[in-house]
Image 1 (cartoon, rainbow, N blue to C red):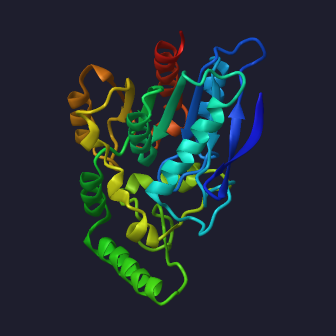
Image 2 (image 1 turned 135 degrees about the vertical axis):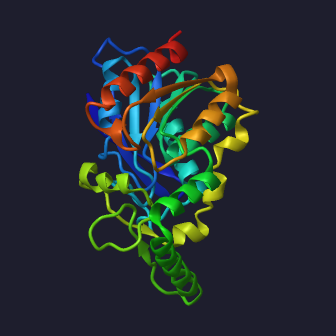
Image 3 (image 1 turned 180 degrees about the vertical axis):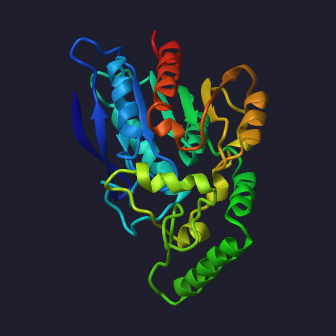
Length: 299
């Protein structure tokens, strides 16, 4: 059972899909999902939301403003503060659902949004649990890893585009665009690892392989650095790590899990950064997430 939904975040309408359990099969808990860096819900999230609904949860998967089916301009622009606002609006929307207990909400994030959900749970003690899949928990270390995987020449080409965009921003010029993942002759890509070449192949129809260069200038990515919260968190979490991940630092994830102590359950899976978005990798990750939410959200 699904329905298209929209909700207002600031002055912008975000849209998504709400998956509901079969009549009489609901458990009263809700889960909010959003994608990672430049992702859209039709790029692997809907299958997770469907799986959660089959397990009795109401699951809301939504697109950030400027991406996918949501409104917002400029398109393909990433702002950490704005995306956090979109998350808050989505959580409030699901909490208001008549069949959902507002005190039994869980969050699900992947990669870049794996950091978002940790911050959101930290600021909202009513969040009962979160799943962070291949999470980007250390912004600085992940930047260094991306530069290394991209290589010196491609990194210099990327910086050149960013510098041009900085100049154009002062002159009122158009937004310059960067590729999200390596694909043909799209130029330097933000995701530097070769494994990111699979991203365009598994992405949905609304996904675009581009993001504004200005995102790197004004998006405040440094605010998405969950490792700084590791000694202050109180929310139980499931961290899902891909052992062959080359896009985010697994050492950072392991260190984060150790510092969180008993709050964090770390699960390891075969494959790379994008492996858990499609079968066969998705099923064990989904099963573990369902089990975790059942333990944290069901009274």
